[in-house]
Image (cartoon, rainbow, N blue to C red; front, side, top):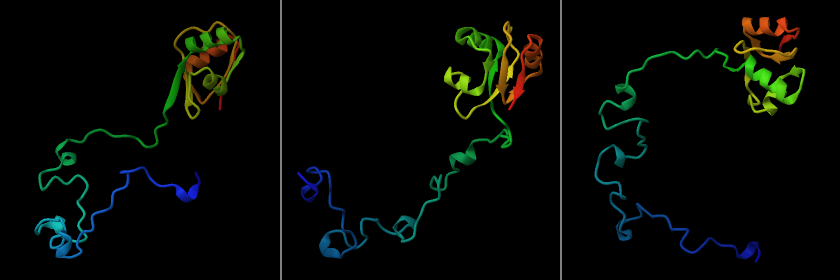
Length: 148
């Protein structure tokens, strides 16, 4: 077998309807478009969401709320999770790469360390943001909260 004798599977390719090629074709006249109306005209395109003149769904449903396009979404990680990670991996510094490797964050996440739980080890933590209580807890154990 080579490229010269490749062909599609039997029945997988159908010939297209040849419409508008005269009355003898059986599809002349209105060319399968029916009689009159917008859909029979050339250049017709229906507006997205058009429901035949009925009030469309996107206008029937009430709108509310606001989404701030400048908001920064953080993946929040608490100190008790950090302590469990430090105990399991036996490390003295936690950075974004370690959090990604251990499955606590995704590659493009911005990470914020929050103060829930207790930190028992001296650990240096690098993250995008810290809560005040987290910084206080980290520094009370002799560690550093390094903002990147």
